[in-house]
Length: 89
Image (tube, rainbow, N blue to C red):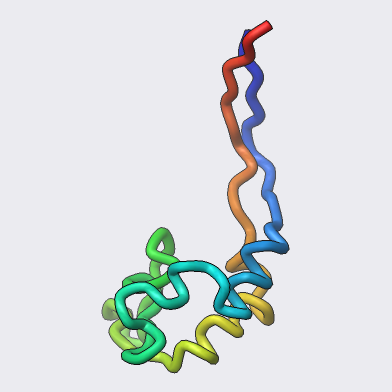
């Protein structure tokens, strides 16, 4: 048997709070706490961030303010709710 859902969004409270507080591994990976964060390179790599002149984002942001954006910008914690499961009875 199969089960699936196409579409819909899921809001992750865990993603929001754990990113904001620095609990998740990626909040310390590759020295981002010491060197800063670049959106779409270090975090949120599945999204595209561009500067005003439409060039690729290369702006280094303080990690404290970058990860606090997960709390204030709730859309960073929204994921596609589609899934496909195989069930065994």
